[in-house]
Image (cartoon, rainbow, N blue to C red; front, side, top):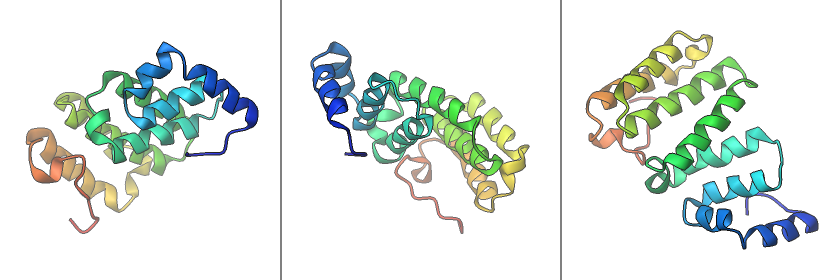
Length: 157
């Protein structure tokens, strides 16, 4: 589990586990299931919700990038999280979303997002300029090996 639940929360989750919403979520990524559980518990911890979905992109890419419901939830929570974080984190999150757009075949949206990151104050992070160059390459050739979700980008690339 990703966190400890109180006894009352466990009871609520057990009841929720019998609903269609839970069963639908259970058929998706485990990270999306955790996200909908947090929504059911009505917790407003948007950082936790976003981190759950971000982990879905990183650790369950086969189930998340092409899943419209997951994708919409990730962007909704990401937008909320961006509003509360520092410029360098905002730039990083926007770069992650640009990659997600590339992966989904949304080239023009991805390229606009890349330019937005470049013009942001958080762009100074040393890895972002190199990462954005890779994203531009991927927007034009998404099937390349270094454009796959499981590719491990290293700063020296």
